[in-house]
Length: 598
Ligand SMILES: [Zn+2]
Image (cartoon, rainbow, N blue to C red; front, side, top):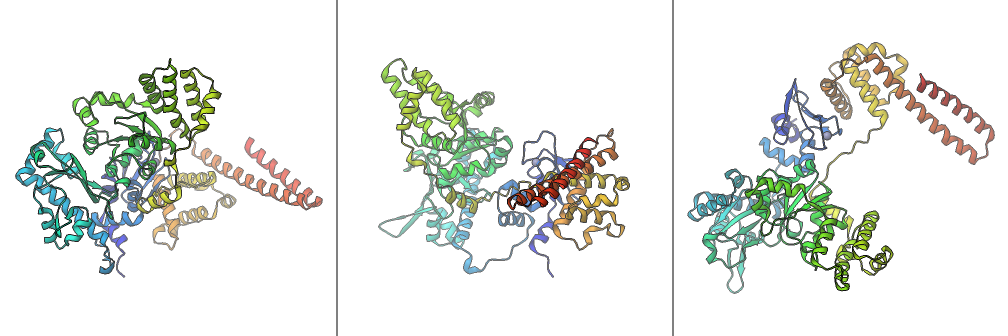
């Protein structure tokens, strides 16, 4: 039988290369280690085993093969992980039926080809070279231009369309990809982007799904659109659901546990280039619930770095209010007058670092702002302050936090807290925030599957695993394990102990074991290999201690069970049964106490 594509990919790719392209690995003996990319990890507890082709974090318990790693780190479903790795391995996945080779797929191809076309124009065409010069002058590095795949759209009516038609796509398809427009009178198609610097927009797996185009000085005069234009929504691209740069930032957002939100593409690119890689831009105007819910999967902490109107009902403010109502902790990076993040990181990276470090909580930001904008000593001023702050307070989902804001507001207005609460009642809950959790979450799931596995291991499982690990690392401990102790282990761990101790089973991988048992053995022997044991430790004592703990846990289970039966018997008024159960309960309690004090 032929290998499945999964086996084929595993054969071709080395886990050290795959993981190493995301995480800086350090060799330690036969293995590699690094600080875990999935939890905040002080001492590196993330290990990669080339011989087993697995990874495991002994801190947070996540682990698996290359597919599990790609799912975790890219935040994608198995299908997408398979595609990413197939491409990397040069393995062709079984071709889809040409009939279901969907419109979607052809649009992806169009976007990718267009991106290549624009990239080439930036390098080779005369105006493209000028555009590139402009980008370099703005402070972008050569490698940054490559990384973000910036390009140039020539200042002609149909060069991109003609190029794509030459590649076998119809004018209608180019239109559907958002890259051309159609004149109403004549059936005339023409390129949407002409004479612009092109910013491809990526999805989470770094496929191009859309574009933004920006004019630059030299050709500004010929331009008819705005400074920035975006493609309209297509089957692949939806402005309200896209966060520019998330594919570059997701890992870092998770690691640093906060996300910096900027306004423009250039800001995102420049801030990323400066080393703050946890940055995304909301493409278009205000933040949408969909975008925020995606971000929430990476961190609860949001730092904004753009102009914020506190009063009024700007799109930006609505987005921030929405973020607050979703429970984000928001901090505001206050930008110096007339500068945007791209300027600051270029001019003075130290200044940027300070601005981020001194970001204000949204509470302090709003209060400082109203005190600056309005006079709290006049009735009018007080009213304005209340009018600005109360709707914000209304949206805070956490009651404790809400009360704190009310207290502070009552203080600056010099009125009673009860009165503020009274006023608060009159504020209608914002109509924007009819959160349709399930529907949105479902849709996000379809696009970005959160594969994080939360360890469901019990304390007893952990102890059993630790014992087996000790046992694997120090086979001499076998003599400490008595026949009757084996009864303490749950069946899967018992199976592992038997497999590992019987000599004819030494080559367990060939044995006919269930996959989950094989994986567990793999993980535990890996752990035994990398586990560091304090040389002063008395192994035998440690081993006995663990055994005792397991015994205690077993007895606790037993006591719970008896307790349950007692309640049952009480319900039936069965006094003789109760009597018998109580005796059992007491004798088990005594065993437990003896064990715990021994
Ligand atoms: Zn971890």
